[in-house]
Length: 230
Image (tube, rainbow, N blue to C red; front, top):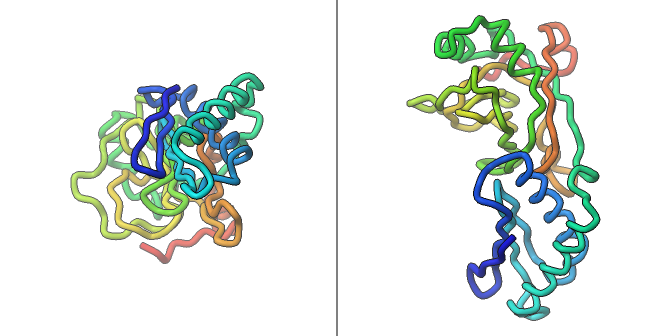
């Protein structure tokens, strides 16, 4: 762990140099500890793949004070070993049907696998939320099985439908809103990834785990899935 200043009221805590499950767990644990113990002086927290950025109130604490309190909070949290204690595991239903799996055929051609094999491999994995970004609630999940890993599209779509589940390299993700995007779309979930009435806004948080459950067309519709956004 190392702490580096960014500007007069911002610093970043780094937990490693590689994107992996262990580092994501440390980021999750640190985020929870900092939020719980330094809420009186911090104004914003931005967790990412390997780090947490902290903005603090200069009228309440200076950079020497924040560094000292950060080290105390993080060392205390590490001693308690709270890695997965606060993390949740979410099971999300996904329909991989042809109406919504816009790029499944391309993934099959790229990987040399059948559609059933791609769906099975994608849905049998349990993923860790590595980062939240791009748009509210957009969770970057890893790591995708290398058998179905595929680069982003060379030309992004102007609009990717809400709930679309995509693959890009060794990551997978769900589009929480209709936005441009270049991920390879292999399915769609009826689950809402953003709750504007909640404190956190996003259904999934960094460090959480996500498991996809393959569903049929009837269940997708029953759970509120839509086809009219294409």
